[in-house]
Image 1 (tube, helix red, strand yellow):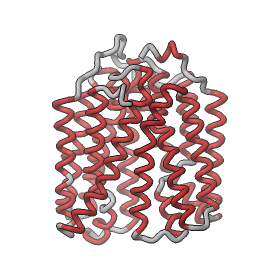
Image 2: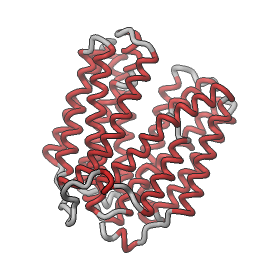
Image 3: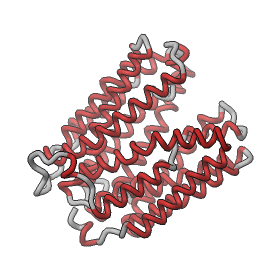
Image 4: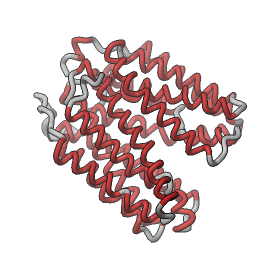
Length: 394
């Protein structure tokens, strides 16, 4: 069942699990901390998240290109995780909103530095025909951490302390364990011949051919893929209580965690493009359902169905990207991949929120469904499945 889970893939999965435990012990509580302890308003929370995510998106591109040039992905992975592990728990010492902004900004710098080199290192560390299950395993471990972190924070608050600063300080423990694992257990994969040398600038690393078309289509899909916070807002509108919202969110993570590995492994057998098309189809149907739901049980069913979208696409998209490019360009490819998603995420949420406010929830969800359907059609027409011969070059 777990063939293809090499040492690096296993350790990087555990690193992501521990890092998400650390992160998710803090960030679900951060809005409450900002407003009730530090006296900030909702607008400042928006500033923090906007600055943080934009920074991460740009640095994912830069670090991916750089990792192709220096041939040493582990150093960038270690530096990124290390910076976040150092910065994140400092929220416990924050005395004002600006300090939280600086800490969150530093944390996202770490995420931007590590993400593309890490994804490329996973591809470097596994046989081409097993990439789907490798990325699926990694994403499954990531979702497990996102589930365990809030549960651990809730348990500590319920049984030990009500002081949010203590919870934030304790979040340092899993973060530093993750860094220790990288130092001791992650190995640099054999460098591919022909890695980029010299100064070519960004233009030398622009995506071309099928990869360019795939990324442009992904950007179109992302413009209809707003933040999942709107789904929680919809759940509240349809009667899901404040007490049940965290349970619904945890249930959602369970579905993602349970589905992403088997669907990633299935893409190794059935092909990547078909799995992505199925995932985008699930997304479109789920969004149509969210726009027309009228009761609480429908919301729970839709969250379960929507979770399959992540299972079908998260690991598979990365595996498809790795199939499209030679080893010496993987870091750059993942940089552009994450940058495309980052560029589309902010306008997607702004547009969705405006449509909801002006025309109602159904109109906003229908637009997301329509863009997903259009993106799926373009992917089917314009992006051929990579040939097996090309995949074997990895």
